[in-house]
Length: 237
Image (cartoon, rainbow, N blue to C red; front, top):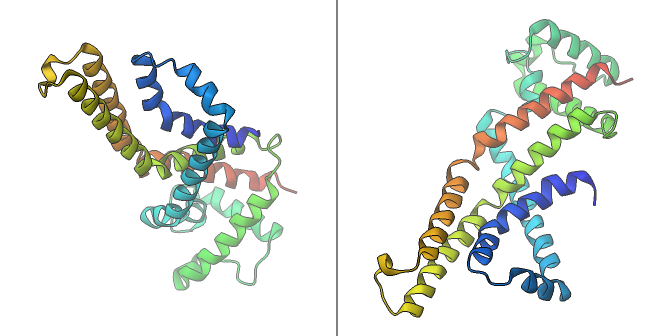
């Protein structure tokens, strides 16, 4: 398994399963034996692969909507003359270098961008794809690769958000029903301490998914990756 798949696809699955794992350990369900049983039938591997695909697909499907809410693809935004995140002198150097590396029919200058913003964005998109194609060497562009993994991890985790919230709510309801049936008492105050601990942990995890896993959380590594990508302009021959 390559490093990107481990960090951006498998780790989100581990976090997704975390509520169920915590419950299993908390209630001493001999979790290891169940894992061995499920593994023998390939169930754990199949579910992990399934949810990794669902997370990636969910993140990719929402990606364009995400970019629109930010005002465009981060790398395209940073290449725009009207964007001030990058020093104007640095931006001029980037544009001049890109014109040399990947000349287009319309190389967007400030006036062209102002008159034809959509066409300018198409040019910036072409340059972005060019840069991505030239920076696939993960060892040479290790910093860029790291930022790409960080972005992929957060995007895929965000893509699994609805599934994760559903799982946690089911586990919380299931735990409540289990104690309700086993004690035959609707008064939760009288339930064992394990119930309070389990519900408390699940609530914390639920709040984590609700308030931390959001668009702003993804935005940080997305723009970091875009900045690193543009920095490679001067390293490409």
